[in-house]
Length: 129
Image (cartoon, rainbow, N blue to C red; front, side, top):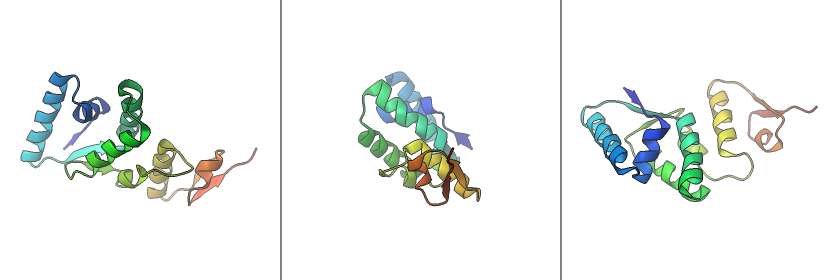
């Protein structure tokens, strides 16, 4: 089993720098051919989402689409499995807030937050000061 870091995911998605992208692709191909489980975490997806925008000038919509295609490719497994759903554009809570909320929901916990938008998610509670 291997877990992909953000640096690997970004290289796979943008193909730059080319030498690193080829090395990442070769290793991923070997994993698939060898039947290795390939994991990508919600933290890696969140970091990649922001890296694509900040370093490569990719819009939020395009970044979500690239990442959704990657996590739904059948090559990787997401932890938690809700990553693909959380990538869907939504009004209200931001991407990372949705990842945090999904992680807590998977554990059976209620998300406590001061943020109105995050509190609008099912199973979240807004604290008031």
